[in-house]
Length: 537
Image (tube, rainbow, N blue to C red; front, side):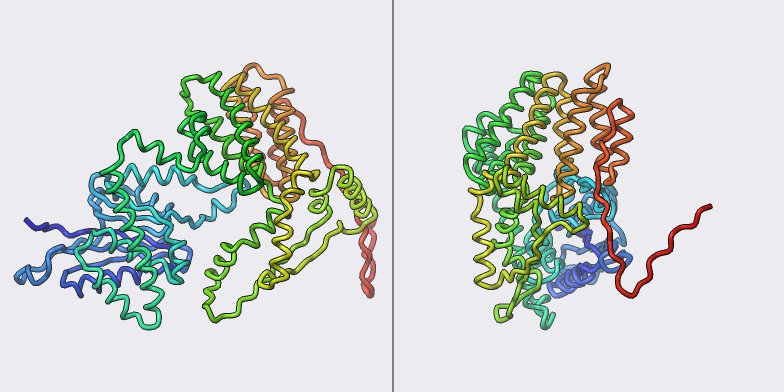
């Protein structure tokens, strides 16, 4: 018996992404294929500011077979009865799921893994992003089937808008009773924009078809015992056998990052540090009741800290072929276009000293501080390098090849010493109380950015370790852990550090010492009279 209920789709896009065009395309495809369809919309506030949702119903029986009857369509989706949710942004997908429209028995979810950060996420001093793992879990738990893919990347590669990619994903899912040729014919009517739109459609279609084929292959050929081997592919066998399954995904990424950043010896150093943490956590939590969360956090934050940014790293990233391809995609450069890229650098004494031995670096830093004390600006060398030129690219590649010099530099030694202080504090805290070790591990979030921001984060971390994790008296280890959590939250909420100082004092620790700042005298520009002195009382 043929289905007599319409197929319902909710299309979600951000303002300016072509959600209205996508809805019109689908209506035109339905009519071309001989099916009845209806669409309604709730447009966003303005370009790039609001979400736009479009509700579409398609009756799955051709109009020619209805014998004059006309289907009755709804104007809005019914909770739990939606056949498909298609979204261009992961958080918007989660928001629609939270509205109760989808069902794990009924709804196919097709979503992009890409994020467009909200204003509130951007305003956070710390990492204010919603964790993608939780959003993806929400998708898995509230869909009968799902396809997650990076629509933003596909769209950039095709040089089109995301609505074309979304149309390809819908066509590839097999949800609608339309032939691929019907979709392509409608897109082909778009005139000069048809070429890029067809590329985006094709890539979206192929991506979903590949996922469907992979799912079928896994269901047919993989037993449960083979799944762990699939998940841990890329992680060395010795590490996979030592570390628990719950950390394998991040450990694979962290280990690969160390190899890329430095070499195999550095990746081994990373793993050895983590083994110490794992041993401490297994000692206090042998059954892994807490999911080895301390080790997992250390896998994450240790990898980020050990791969700190320096001029070698920056030169490497800016001279990669992938970066050049990304720039070409962002400016939509065509094969016959002349593309020139200039990178601006301003290395100062700290960046140069970082690659020098400690003795030379110290003398150079002292010389620069004396300049500042005399009222001069810190020394820096502004550079403008054309990375499109042979000379510019060679300059960056020569600088990127200095990995061997990095490990002999003063900064590398200082970073490793500070990392070890944090590592020792995590291990000692874990041995005393699981929650205490976990909170100290989470303090790795304080290390971020570069320059003064990075230095301030390390100073804050060491102050918390020395005065809360060690020195300050607490009645219990749990109370000490709560104090560290409060200090960490305060440090991430206030860039000036006032909130952190208040949290420290509140828990019996001294506020951070006030750092001396030189007084700089600025000459009055010629022709401008000096400012009048203030009058007394």
